[in-house]
Structure formats: C-alpha cells, structure tokens
Image (tube, rainbow, N blue to C red; front, side):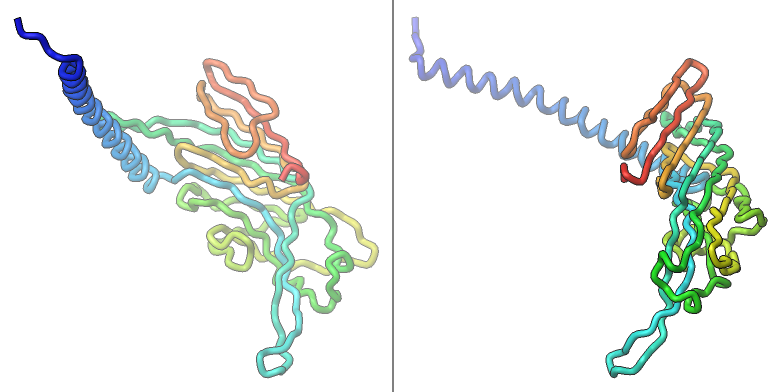
Length: 264
C-alpha cells in the first residue's frame, strides 16, 4: 500500500480547500452583483418618480435681506459705488406640518412619496441700522427682499402664502438677491424705522409641499421649533438633531424638535 508524505498530504488539503473556496466565492459574487444591480435599479426608479413628483426636500429660511450702499476704489484708484447685502435671520421660527405619505410601485420597487401643508410663523428682530454699523442714508429700504428656499421647487403645489408685518405679499421664483438662489423671494419695500422704535416684525408663511423619501429643515432662527405628524408608522429620524419629543404608534407618528442658535 502506497503512503504519502506529510508534505504531499498538506498540499492536497490546500488544493481541496482552494477548490471549495472558489466554489463558494462564485455564487457569493453572483449574489453580490445581483444585490448591487437591484440597489442601483431601485435608485433609478426613485430618481425617475421623484423627478416628476418632487425630490427630497430641504426647507430653508426665511431670511430678510436688505441692500446697503458702500464705496471703495477700483484698480485705477477711482471711487466706485457698490451694493452689499445685510441678511437678517429670524428671532423665532415655528414650523408645523401635517404630511400625507403615499407609496408608489414600479415593478418590484416601491417609492415613498409625501405631500402636506407646512405652516411657518415667527418674528424678525427690530431693524436697527446702528447695530449694523451702516449710516441710515446708505440703506435701500425700498429694495429689501424676503427669501425662502425649497431645494426642489417642483414640489410646490401652490404659491406659498406670505404675510410680513401684517401685510399680504407674493413670493416669486428666483431669489438671486438672497442667500437661496434657487428659492423664492418677495419684494417688501420697507419703511425706515422711526427713531427709538423697537418693534419685532412678525411673519407667516405657508403652502402645500410635495416630495419623496426625506424632508429636512434648516434651523435659521435664534430659536427654531418644528412639529410634524403623519399617518406613517415607521419613520426614520436623521439629520443633525433628533426629535426632542416623539410619539410613534401603529396609526402614525408625532415628533417635535427645538434647535437654538447655540446648537448650530
């Protein structure tokens, strides 16, 4: 009877192990490629549906922007006039939203969509040119604008309603003069504050917004409060701040956030 040396036996074992490893690697690789293909296809489906309904939304603002005149010198030493902008953030901002989720199917894939009413209200601090360090005569009050950003304006189902300082006004597309160039803007034609006037300016903003997958808010105010509710039993909370309070049940959820300027 022929016997094999230990080296031969070890080599045979390594060969067998290698064959088994290869046999296992091939189907595993095929499964991994299939999973990746399905994930890529799902992303394509989400992109296709979102492109016609509304993508993931980021709600930004509002911000009050006021132009001021400044003077400087050009490269030839000549005095030139320039326009700069002062951007005033809200003192307080309260956002309330009631969302209605909807699941759309395409082949074996599903896309989570939503639409709902958003209501924003708050105050801007008193307009004080002395605090800005700008001479009052250099401030162009009649060209002030309020800007409001929505990352995908296609999701707006109506022109947002705006009341600023108790006056109704309209938001128009194109906020290039403010911090949100893809958002909306309203020309305010402000009146210079009277001497010693220390009155906060209230605003209310609201409308219907649609989107998909996610809804984020930019906490621009000194104190930002957000409250959302929806008949969706398994929400996922992400972003820089988790809810301060939340209640999740089989018939939906309620959640609230409070973000201070110190947190930012």
